[in-house]
Every structure is written in structure tokens, then in C-alpha cells.
Image 1 (tube, rainbow, N blue to C red):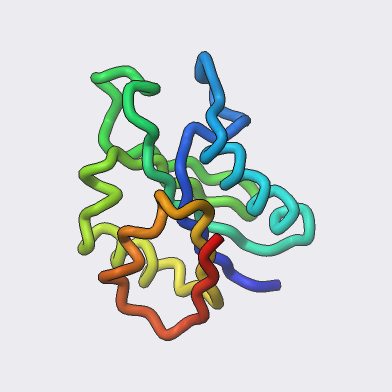
Image 2 (cartoon, rainbow, N blue to C red):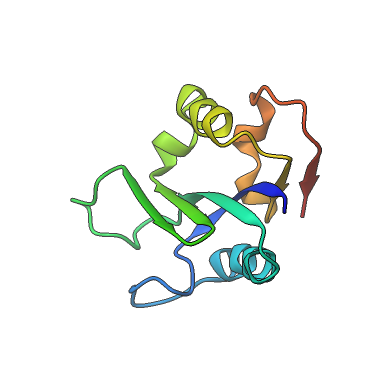
Amino acid sequence: MSRLLVFGLCPLPFENTEKNFGPGIRTWQFVKPLLEEGHEVTIIARRIPFIYPEDSPPEIKESKDHLNYYNLTENLYLDTARIQEIHDAFAPDAILAATVFSTPPLLRLKTKVPVWID
């Protein structure tokens, strides 16, 4: 199966937060069926402001089955070197950006794989 890198926003619906928001739900709408079909997915998600506790680490990484999930503060999400590092380590076959708010890192990303923006 394919290795797909997804840029999106969080929280995602499975997180233990007080609320879910449209951009995180939209991100999960793309990822969930990809996982169900057996694709390997890495999500790099930008935190929606004021959702996570202020003392949360700037990067939270979770891995389960075929999913790697990077939950990043806005500053880290916009850190070109960190995003490139995640991309290069994962070596995706294609990239998907869910919502226009997830696209800023794509402007500086060095990649040769197809990119699809929602």
C-alpha cells in the first residue's frame, strides 16, 4: 500500500479534548478511510489555538498500527527544518493537505511526490 503524508489541523476526533472543530474533523475525514484501506499514513497537524493546555509539549507524537501522528504547535508546524525532517524520514509516495489552513509548510517543502490540496 501507499505511504501518504497528510497535513491538517487538530484536535482530531479521537483526542480527549472538550471540543472538536471542523478543520480537525475534515483532516480525519481523509485519513480514516485511507487507514481502513491499509495505507500507511503520517499526519502532521497544526494545533488550533487555545485548545491544548499551555504546558503541553510543542510536539506530541503518537504511533499506532499504520498511523504516525504529529500534533504540533503553530511555531513548530511552520518550522521548515522540522517539517522537512518528518517528510524525509517517512518518505511518502504522495502528500495531501486537508483545508487551506494546513498548506503553509508546503510552500517550502522539498519533495518530488504528487501533492493534492483540499
